Length: 272
Ligand SMILES: [Mn+2]
View (cartoon, helix red, strand yellow):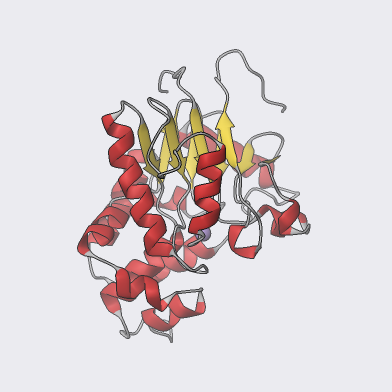
């Protein structure tokens, strides 16, 4: 378990190419200034992945986040992100193109069917590709377990966060099309911790295997989970007996998104 830091930690869910919404969120939270430069000093900002697809400006979102990462590091702060399944879909479309997935489709078609934006693939550079391919799948930040998807497959990839990240890294560094396709299929699943009969137990298992007292994820718009209008979602949804925090504000569905700030874990309580 890492030592909890006293520095603020901000979290933003799935952006999906909505640059204007992201800029507004970052400005309202005092993380960037009018020129879109980092102004949050030593603060930490984490993204849950899914920067691209489904929206208009995926590459511009990547460019902003990558620049803020450099600026934050220079100021003693940090900007980091998980790998989302849409980064992987875009990487697969770029790498394999029309090559068969081995399961009756091809990677370009699969990406388009999942909201792929031609402008994004046309604007990709080696810098973007390299950056995305090295994003971690999981992270333990203070006492919080971060993962993009509320999907069960992470536990098949390894029994520690390092093992899971190494498994992703290995897959992303190779051109085993069928392995990519299987991972994309697994990644697309959602709702692992919402199930009324075993959701809480499954969340407890994840936290006991990988560590952390609360699991933070995106991938599954809160409005979809709760069947409510996306425009009404302006805060995280805590569920599974307080063990899970969904931070996906459904920006591509019309939600404004939100910034979730983690509180110091020491001494605070989680409902069980
Ligand atoms: Mn996703």
